[in-house]
Length: 273
Image 1: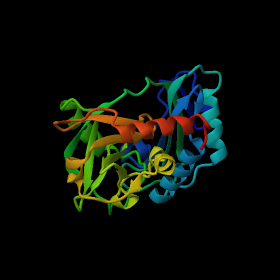
Image 2 (image 1 turned 180 degrees about the horizontal axis):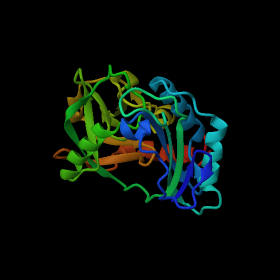
Image 3 (image 1 turned 120 degrees about the vertical axis):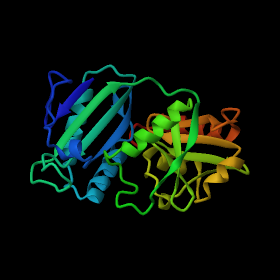
Image 4 (image 1 turned 90 degrees about the vertical axis):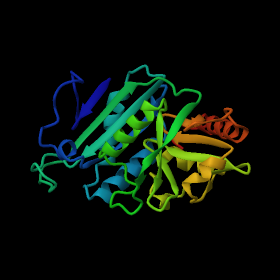
């Protein structure tokens, strides 16, 4: 693992550098991006940086300097042999009083790169009893306030799954804890619209663009009649779901397989689509 913190590489990546009053630590007042690294190069970096800026604006944080961000990314990846890895950029409000109100301190910027095991060929997911609030002030923003996801993912793992699937407050299908969800009905690949409150996933956007996935909001029980289910995320790409709750699927289904092949073909054409 290599860590770049506020402009400098750390000699010791485990060193304590975040102050105890950092608002990202005390109340989760920050935003982040997680990217896949392919042969030492971040995939879709420009799209991820654009989304980071949007999340920062939505949270009311100042915009980070894109050139500084890119220099941090270069620093943590330079000279590393990393066939597959994960890159994380975190931008917080910085030091602040021990409460919800922000202070006047400078923001905190951290970039981390570490090797990552390739995603499994398929996975299991479960639906959870909690919902996403599509009308939340932070709906669709990639913030560091992830406690809701931690609880839901623990629920999923207790049931032998690697992802939890949320509906939203009106009962429509929404997303996973760290992925967008797709499914096939009547031979058509579909995924919830951004109005559902789901994150505007980079992988989701590319899969919609490349694979012709239809964006539509439907009741969450549409999954009960889905012929195929798949997840979309930076670390999963297009990943078939072999089990949803207690229902088993033959994977990959024909539509999901086509999406996977289309993804691989387009990904090979350029690292920053």
